[in-house]
Length: 244
Image (cartoon, rainbow, N blue to C red):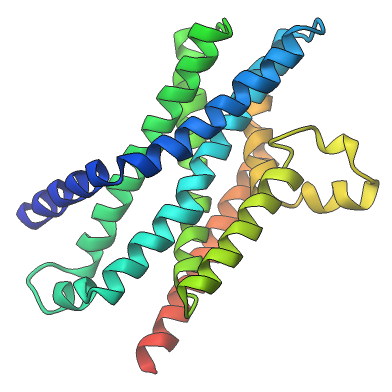
């Protein structure tokens, strides 16, 4: 516990140093929401669409951190030999990764609070407090799949390749998952692909709760399956990398 406390303090210090990055990853989705919700508001759009788009932009904000911050931080720790130093210290690698998870989830929580606040105070999105909290928890728990994908990207052999793969995956999940606009605008074959993405499935969990106050069991299972499968893949790849 003592080691974890020190690691978490260090993570908080590093978060302060990366404040400019977080401003972009949280600010950009907020701006997108203001622009597109403003266009929607002028065309008698139902409130449920404004709410749905708000939560889509929240997931979009979280994905930005997952695909760019996580690989960058892990790669930096590797090149600076911080990970090797941890391995030869009383601190375990489990504690190291838990501290990274702590700072990542703290960043995600900040994204949720900021984007939700923009929707509520600027666009007048209103929900009972319990619904705000439950939807925030759904997004935060569901974000584990994006954390796993970010860690997977960090295992690529070069920073350039990480950047390319991260950008392509990030944009594909945003567009195909329906975070920017409904996937019904796409041809049927693209809709089929889009419905397989974890971003789409997570939003299905959110929208089902939002509209019916019930749980979308199939979407939850698919999102969990993605998280488990990617986590197992990470463990296998790390073993191979360590052997080499």
